[in-house]
Length: 139
Image 1: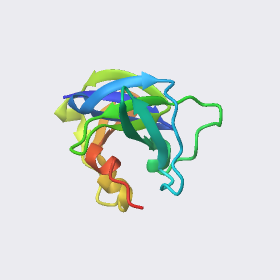
Image 2 (image 1 turned 90 degrees about the vertical axis):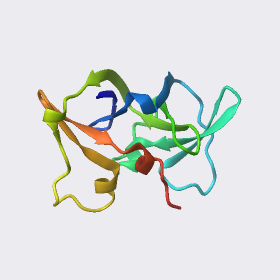
Image 3 (image 1 turned 120 degrees about the vertical axis):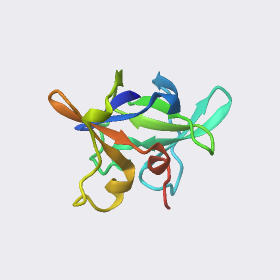
Image 4 (image 1 turned 180 degrees about the vertical axis):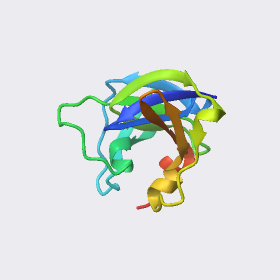
């Protein structure tokens, strides 16, 4: 399987390449009043307005530095494209089933639904995100 990788805070994350529409940098985000904290705002992308989800906030990490310029990973969902704001975009990695493990039973709460499992890579773990859960935001 091929995963598009990126970082959000200290986490090394990946999603299926087939779910990625494009990766962009420097797009302005328009804030939306009263939006849930993980919704950073809206992005105007070639005539289409899409939701921008702050992946750091969605994963329960602290906010990035005020002067940070996040990268935008636009993912395909059944409801249309959604933007995931990440700290840094990595490479596309080919991962093997032999290196995959599901989350342990002791992992509870929202993070269990967001993570399909982890790939054991040399020196670190690559967390495989469940895109449809990551973009599902409750008010």
